[in-house]
Length: 326
Ligand code: PMP
Image (cartoon, rainbow, N blue to C red; front, side):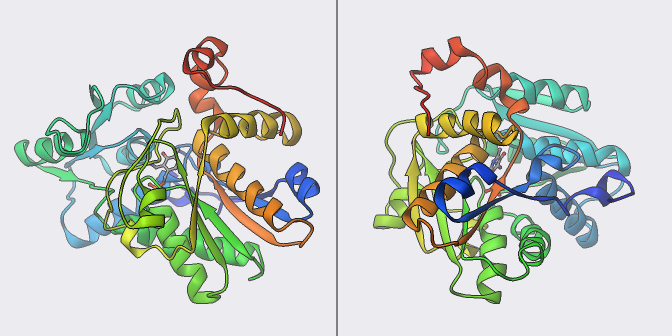
């Protein structure tokens, strides 16, 4: 059990064995419980890494305002750390994310700026807006989670080693979706340095370009997804560090079926990206049925963060998402 300030209790999360899926497949499937971080997601690690490196380099000084463009979780991570050091936060988000994330950010006292989602090439994309605000206003630091490689180093230095230790150095596969790429890059680089034969698989939602990039070298996408915080149409500096063997695409139907399966059979309430991750881990286990392989994935955040969407039958029906038994 940990004790300390908010910044001191980030990480060292539990690794949960997902029993129902392990029993169904004859493999061992584990999820790293990142929803246990103080801000409720895997992005607390990136937020802490970005703040720490910026303080050390002198880019972030006492009294400064931290500015970031985010799907929400990185903003929440930054905002949970800001009071400890006396920083303020300006958070820029697309306006189609779950209401829960906006509510949490407002409670944390950030200045919240939202705008309709748009392609990256549009200057109103949240990434460009955050960059612009940080440049225009005095005493601002732009966290820049996509290109600031402090993000991937946080996972290389903490999440990767924790997984290696918790598995006693015995794992066969690691599976992860990608938002900025910090998680998959930091963990895959660390694990491959320990044992290059660990299989690393990227799982992409529809509407993201990385699946096609891994298969053809071209970023292109079809369809869309209700998952949040993952999927991207460009290659970031953080993603460039990743060591990936293959890629799969998982539909929202399969993602949501897994989200409900985990709740009912394992008592696990996981968010949409985590459910996508676990579905891909389950698929990998089915491909290697009864092999006893040990598979690790990330439970990025909690279903509670999306309850107005994932537990809302009307919303799901409008989106045409069909849930079924695994
Ligand atoms: N899941 C959720 C819920 C997220 O918010 C994020 C971060 N945007 C990710 C997964 C992806 O993590 P990363 O940015 O490290 O690729």
